[in-house]
Length: 250
Image 1 (spheres, rainbow, N blue to C red):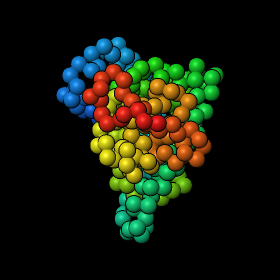
Image 2 (image 1 turned 120 degrees about the vertical axis):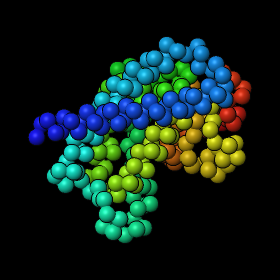
Image 3 (image 1 turned 90 degrees about the horizontal axis):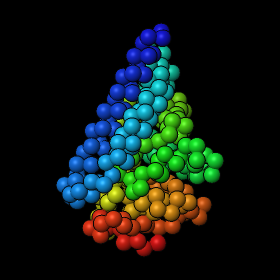
Image 4 (image 1 turned 45 degrees about the vertical axis):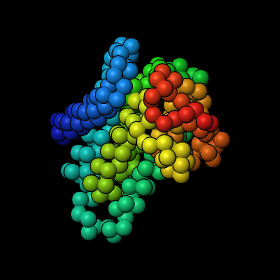
């Protein structure tokens, strides 16, 4: 039993690592095309971001591999493969449920990571990216990576979800993690400063967190920040006036 589980862990680690390299690499390429040379002075920082991110991939791969093996061989989870097992309306609702639960977990663990002791021990690794790049999305100290690695594997034990819907959740998690760190705004100004941007977190909102630290802790949605009084609005991309649509309005 130990060898199949180990192989599942290795496979999931490789999948997560390749996914990170592919998505971060694609958006880093898009950044270079849009703003040539913008990361030129951050090569050493990018090297550190890739190092910590690949280390995080191994930590994410451990629970993911164990749970994947348990689902396939022991039926441990509530992941289902036949659409008819649950009402079709549950398919989009399950995606929303996972995103809401993940967002809540991230907000409170992220806020906890900003306590002075935990910040020094773990979260300072992520904030060493000044400013963050497209490679920084998984640049975590192992202790912080562990808090992020357990949430999705835990949710599949309590919330039913189709295997393809789980893929949608992971795709959203990956893309938003990268785009919120790449140093410019991918969404149009009318979205960021309009109704959509009042609820959905984009790079402009997360940029404020990386500049002011004690605010804007959310992952996908702004309502936890608004509810808890930690939302300080949009940030501004200081290095290049062409960067995105954020204009620094609080």
